[in-house]
Length: 270
Image 1 (tube, rainbow, N blue to C red):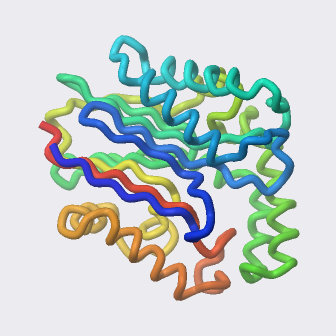
Image 2 (image 1 turned 120 degrees about the horizontal axis):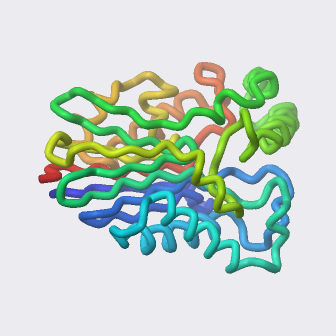
């Protein structure tokens, strides 16, 4: 088995709000949600993602626990770590989560939020991405996309979009992420596949997935080949190059020029 990983903050002087861990049996990748409003928390998103990721990695290493139970236990653990914060705030720190766990016969997966898992069985790909967040606040998203990145109008539109998103977060008909309530795990995408059917896999945040999902500069198959030949740092380099080529978002409308980006590539599973 080979495991290769890379993670970068959106800018060199910013905290990385992504988090990952990777072992031969458990891969965990988190994407902390950008905070544009008051969170009621003194710790911040990066702290939340790191605390949740560490706890989830430990819980998921117990093969007797389901991945949903492991995530629920981790959410509860982190909530108990900062009870002095207002965990009822609509903007309380949250994160999208993906877990890939290997046992002797199966790969189990869990996805909650827009972190993605790509499973390759002889180029027959299974793509697991929870895109429910993209279906929320659509009017506000389109309004924000009309303004150049860095403008005052863009910043104001993003605040309006964030409020609309938060109204749909962890609510029926909206989208679901890890925050302070363990019950959100009931809405995760879960499944398993035979371990000997999968040759390679990718777990990545939406910042790294931009190469495929936003910029259309690669397919999932060509990303796999790029990862195999040049590694995850090259994927992130190409993402950054494309972001810099369109700094204000005219070609590819988006919320910010660059996003935190994390990718874990696993090859030779058996």
